Length: 218
Image (cartoon, rainbow, N blue to C red):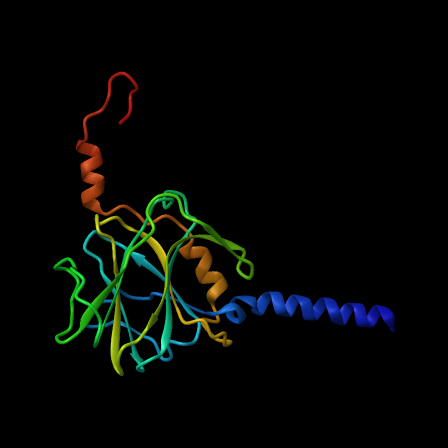
C-alpha cells in the first residue's frame, strides 16, 4: 500500500511539472506581425499574461490593446530571453491612452487621435536576471512599471527598438495568476529560443564592411 501511494505522489508531481507553464501566467506567442491595424487583443489586463514576441526588422513596432478602468493599477513589463547576442537588447515601450502625458515618440509609432503617451524607458547596460522556475528559462529584466490608469477607455502598448535592432522579448501585463495560455507552449518555446536572423540589409552591410588585415576579421 505504501508503494502505491508513493507512485501516486510521483505521478502528481509529474503532472504539476507538465502543467507548470500555464500555472505561472498565461503564455502566448506572436503568430503574426502585431501592427497598429492588427494588434494583440488583451482580454483582461489584470490577469498575468506573457506574450513571447519578436522585433524582426528595424522598422518593426508591435502593438497590444486592452480596455481599462479609471484607477485600475496595471503592471507592464518587458523581459529579454537569455539568448546569445541579446545581452544588451533593450526595446522601448510606451503606454498610449486617454489622460496620459505627452512623451515624444518616433514617427513610426502610430498614436491614435486623442491619446496621450507615457514612455516606460528600458534599463540600458547590464540587467538583473529573472529565472522562470516553471519553464526553466532565464531572462534579463528591462522594464517594469505599475501604472494607475487615469480614465476609462481603450489603451495601447507599443514596443519597438530605438536603433532598429532585432531580437526576441516577452511583453508581460497583469499580475493576477489564472490558469490558461497556449497548450503548445513547451514545443513552441523550443522553436522561439533561437537568435533572430539578421535582416538582409544588415547582412549586406557586414559583407561590405572593410576587413582588418592584421586580424583577418572585422
